[in-house]
Length: 432
Image 1 (cartoon, helix red, strand yellow):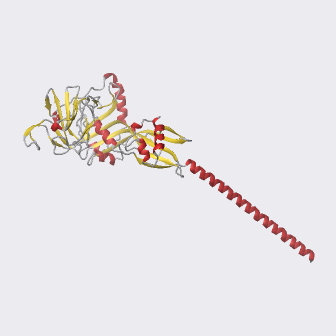
Image 2 (cartoon, helix red, strand yellow):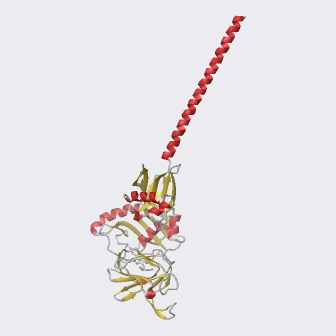
Image 3 (cartoon, one colour):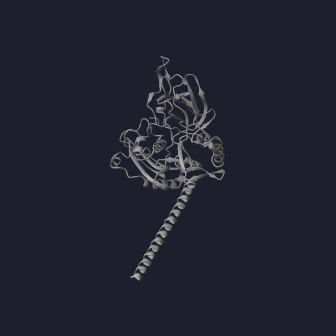
């Protein structure tokens, strides 16, 4: 009996020892895991503090230099000056553009780590801290070019139709530029007009359109009449648009001094009652009623022979063109060119205003040759040179390839009268 008691106690002590040992092993294992987790947490915290950058972003305000823009994001003046000095080594800060995005990146502890400025859709200026200094470089945003077809129908405006087609208003401006010699996109578009075009898109990896490339071919049907354009190059090698049969889309002058026009409030007349002077006198120009600040463009290449204030004309820009014509742009709120400056067709030269003898904001536009003023609404404007014979085969190949990529016209478009202005249809009036 005593022997059994001894065996019992021995087994009990052994079992207790095993339990205690197991308990210690579990405790040690738990402590080891805890230590490991603490170490991992410490490493992760260090990684977050070192690697994670939180950006605070805002739009660059108008007329604000780079240093001042950084200061609005909480960077002190001396550090902002250092950042600007670093950036200037790779990017001319005079090209800083209002409306672009600028961002300051800090660690979770609030330490300045980086500055990012979006130069354009395809590139970004990155300034990063390296020790006690800053390093700047321009990074390219990866994208691929896709050629896509777009089409739409006018309900109220070209702008609205392009947006309804899922594209940005920029393309409406581009179409207006292409067809601006034949159509006035203030007055000519009608509900039911249709457009089709082929455009290059620079698409980011996430599917977002970063920017648009070239419009390779385009068609606009105005009240059933088709205007078509194909991208090629002029004799100097510059990009230019031509009709499918090789005639230049470009005329000596644009169709209008305003890209997207206002209504004509006063036509050319030799006997008009002046609303301010209260007398009948000639009005040798065309008044476009447009909001103050509307951009005014040069209708043709030329040289500025006057830019400034001139009596009842208000702020005036006068341009001499190589074909003997002189154009006048009057009552401007602001002049954007200077005497003697060369300007290109379509270049912005001023803003609509009501300076001088004007009862409201408008542009008084006039055209003169040989001392005589002409009615721009009825003035025939010849096109520039067609595709050269030596370039015809190259042009035809590019034309056929581009037109083959055009989206198929919808049923409604297909029913519209399909007449190209370069074929049997008479040429439209260049100004209306």
